Image (cartoon, rainbow, N blue to C red; front, side, top):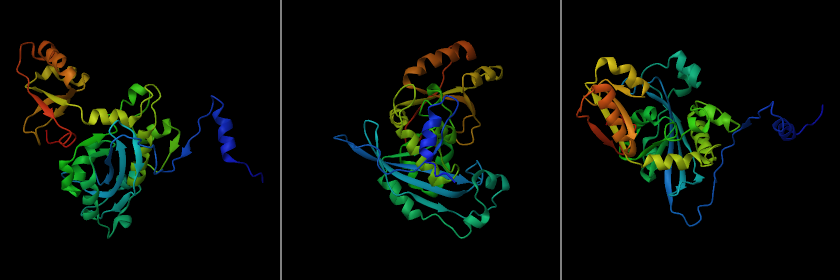
Length: 295
């Protein structure tokens, strides 16, 4: 049997436009030397759960990966990850096992070491998750100290679509020529850090530099309170979301915008939705509340 170097085969395939080569992701500890830049601490978090609603469902796996970065948006290094399963009070449904590979036998007798997570959170200047709107409410139940930390989201605060890329983590990894064990918490954290470190195909900037710009930029929630029912399709088309009032106590359509887009959005609402000079509530959202559902 011939002893063929797989890298030679991969290199040959890459020279053809008819093939794409995917390589297994091997996590690394060092990304870039910081030079004279100020270095801060981040923490990537990923969770697997028994469902989508933090009011009813439970965390069954946690991955946390500390990292360092510079204030000008460069990733420097990754630390030692923490991983734990957690046995839920309720059952793990078959569809969750199919998605995550986690079943009751894997989590039996396991509990997340809260003191260890607390120590990692205490040191962090920024928490990052890929889909922080999902992870943050669950994570704050595991570690309440996360409620006092600023959060960034590698799903919505990086312009993947504008770069011609997908949004799901495994799709983005594939676009960068990587494969990894998706839907396993630490593997997801390590893959997220890797893709954030790489230059994007159109802008040439790294995903992390985009995320850091967005994470601390002012954001405002425009609330289309008492919008006419017949305007719902126009609001949906403009990417408004519905708040049923469960947490905010205010049923309305809403949209989160950077400061420079608020005035034009108010003008659109008054012209196309209310058709008069309506008083429209605007709520500032800090990085400490973003993705939490508390706004």
